[in-house]
Amino acid sequence: MNHIDRITTPRPLIGVSGELKDFNGIDIQSSGHKYVYSVVEGFGGMPVVLPALGDRDENGSYTMAELVDRLDGIILTGGRSNIEPHHYEGEPFRPETYRDPVRDSTTLPLVRAAVDRAVPLFGICRGIQEINVALGGTLHPYLWEVDGKRDHRMPQTDVMEDRFAPRHLVRLTPGGYFEEIAKAAGLDSEVMVNSLHSQAVDQPADGLVVEALSEDGVIEAVSLPDAADFVVGVQWHAEFRVLEHPFNRALYKEFGAATMRRAGARAQREGVV
Image (cartoon, rainbow, N blue to C red; front, side):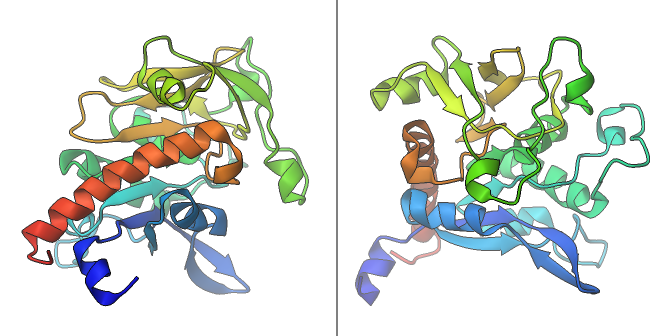
């Protein structure tokens, strides 16, 4: 691709949410490689890791609106930590529950800014929970203790292929957006997925539509039909081996198309094309 091609067909710039982590006593900002690479693999986008700094200002600068305006799409990643219940008026966590208040203070306003500014948004695992809570929904903080629900937590293994192997079926909502995507790709309305999580959506936020349920009734996917552009969350790890999973490949293609539309429109506004 030459310089002229890059200008006339701008590739979408995709923000991938990160976390503040300790690495041998040093604070680092990071995001899992599979999330970052899925942007390249799934639709040829240009990924950038978004730092967990909170929604700053009053002269701490760095506001979500300014950040979001420069992006063509956002992926909200999974993660070990759970969203603190005070964000949805839930009971406090037990002491042993892993939390990340800096990430919460970053991603929840990030969701609202993206929806307000029509930036395509794709939440994965913790990301679907962030979309739901940011828009006013609630979560099951300890899903495995809910009557009738199976244990969806991650298996204790360091072997990636085993950790992210398919776990169970989900059924796509008849007539829903996900079923339309599946039909367009020639796929069935039942999809085998690799859900790995301890929290899950309880009450969906106003405006969110349930797009998939697991066999034990856990909400596995949502969309926001009234949004100006693509807003979707999945509880499973769609980023893992994207091209090897037909439905995830189709879902990334749909997300990618939305980001490319925004990239083109943004380039025209900024006089790049």
